[in-house]
Image (cartoon, rainbow, N blue to C red; front, side, top):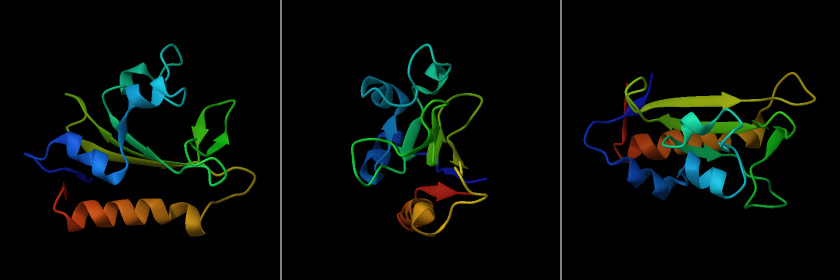
Length: 118
């Protein structure tokens, strides 16, 4: 399990494209109140964004609120700043190629800058 090192301010995750769940909800995206995700409002999330509309999360299935790629740093007592990564294929048995670059690059950058530990 990867997690944010002690002493690293979670606000520094913004440099890497992360926003709180509350910020995503306020934009009308994932983590909306009443949709069962409000418990994620204080977590920091980064998503694969839609190439045609870079301000919008790329969803595998919008009806079921399933982003293609989600990287989260889960904040709270039950989740001591651990990293959670989820990928949702749609219309195929896998995703790959450029879709997963966001994971590789984010983990590389956070590790290289000394933000993550096992």
